[in-house]
Image 1 (tube, one colour):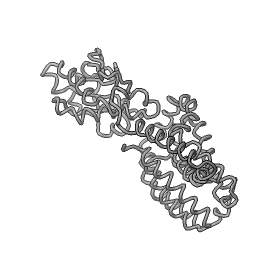
Image 2 (image 1 turned 135 degrees about the horizontal axis):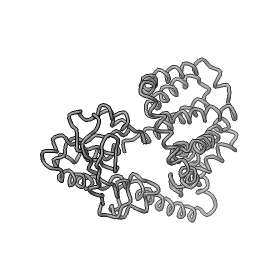
Image 3 (image 1 turned 90 degrees about the vertical axis):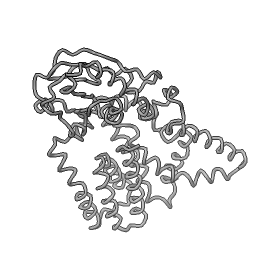
Image 4 (image 1 turned 45 degrees about the horizontal axis):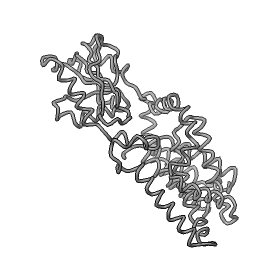
Length: 368
């Protein structure tokens, strides 16, 4: 899956490991590596600032605080700033769209994210592994030999509080659970070696098989498309990988309803970049022209030429600024009963433009 969350997981885990190395060795030069990884992470998503602030506060609370008293820290900050500067400059000159997206997530999904936050912490890594990362927390907090690593436990809870306040996605904090799970591996192995070892190992083996089966079903395309509805609550992206050729065929059916002379100046405009991507990929097989969308950065490939005055095939909406005489021409059905984002999407045909695309485009751009 090519998405910001994929890279965030790698960046967060890497920063966590580097921070632990810094705390364990007292070698301030690790700040340089932390700064470099943080700078790369900021080029992906600014969510890494939550991790850095949480780790910083956690070290202030639990120590060792002397790791802040080194010239390597500002050097690391300088590296991160230099790497992130081009992205910050672009954001500043384009109206801070990243902050707009974050605000939209909090406004639209914030309540649901807060309600589901704790339950999803228990299932994202697999319920089978919850005792392992809890054991990791206990080990880091109680083992005097690992006193230097207590900040990791505190940082996890600080990130959770930050996300609850901001209404962020529950999976944002999962990289810290990966680190805590690693810390819990040693006490888990010790537990398996005590007492009735055969019984404990049999139980652990059964749980491993159960956990692996759950992870395979949730994360990988092993279920048939019409059986995906139960896993969508944990992995919505499973459903979003189904039905794009059929979706494009629905749009093509509406396109063919347009009189042949009108198609030369007609435009396909989609509500989101996923729809546009599907039509761009599968549309040529149906004789469809290039699609346009004002969603996210897909808008940077627009607007349509001003000479394309309509009609407009509007995907995912029933009306838009600058056109009139809109009518719903189709409603997409994936034929599987799968409740993904495009199930029930309407395709609307609107008349000619009342204003040119170059004038309308700023109004049509949206980030969520």
